[in-house]
Image 1 (tube, rainbow, N blue to C red):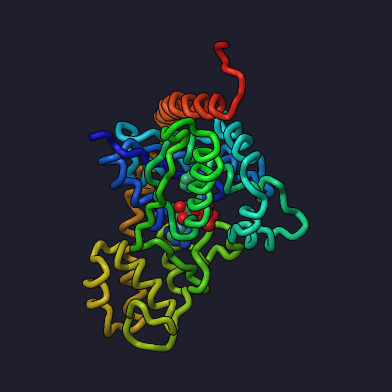
Image 2 (tube, rainbow, N blue to C red):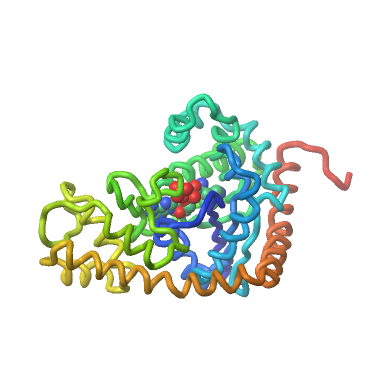
Length: 338
Ligand code: ADP
Ligand code: TRP
């Protein structure tokens, strides 16, 4: 049996939060066991909105360190830095030239981000989903584990591969690019903001209190949960559309406590917020503690971290260069060894 390929990535745009962990990275840890896995830090994506050059490198390394701290094992997966693999930018250009403008105009995340940045919207931000498609297609990924919010980008990657490359340029039945599938794990797929449970928890929310950072000190976590929005009802429950806060905080609790949905719902069904919040705080702090310990070790001496990235980069170059060569030849570029 050949192993399935997995690829995913997170932007190094600030410290990762509970949503990134529960919605994305936590699932990668399991996936690396039975699949050939690639996890990248997508720093090229991070410059699609104005960025601070003094922070980019630091955040890139810290994101890679958090991958490892959350349980990615370099013996089982490749961890690499997107900007160090030039094939990503190159494939992005090639895909740009076959992707219809009106497909891109439908991208919800672009519309939302563009609204936030007003007049200062780069072409890179508009092109973000094509670069993401390049990330995925370069590795012939079978499955792409992401949170729910990325589903539309995955569909775009599939459409580009299938309709704009394979059906136009394949000779015979042999596909040039593998058409990837999204892998959206429902539990924890969307963790919402602590201050407004109608919006997702996000690094780009200007209110720090809306998210729990994986590197937040216990005291900070306690404060944030204490201030988290609640309602006036007693008893926590899932699935009541009138009670998004209850749904969100119970959902976080069910995962960080390890109880799962049914047991957590049972335990908290008659609990008031005053009793529930300390429980959630303790469970969150305990779940994050081992991650913070490992992270601090990796960052205080970065020799091991850099070695792991170099290994990952070198495997990523090997695989991505092959795909790029195959595609360039298929669409008619002159062969390098003519
Ligand atoms: P952010 O919106 O915080 O900048 P990213 O866009 O960098 O997060 O997302 C990185 C990964 O984490 C993606 O796979 C995304 O689907 C997942 N993710 C981000 N926010 C959440 C959330 N609130 N709940 C679940 N998953 C999330
Ligand atoms: N767009 C993704 C996000 O915001 C990050 C990302 C970039 C990604 N390239 C990717 C995710 C490739 C999965 C696969 O979360």
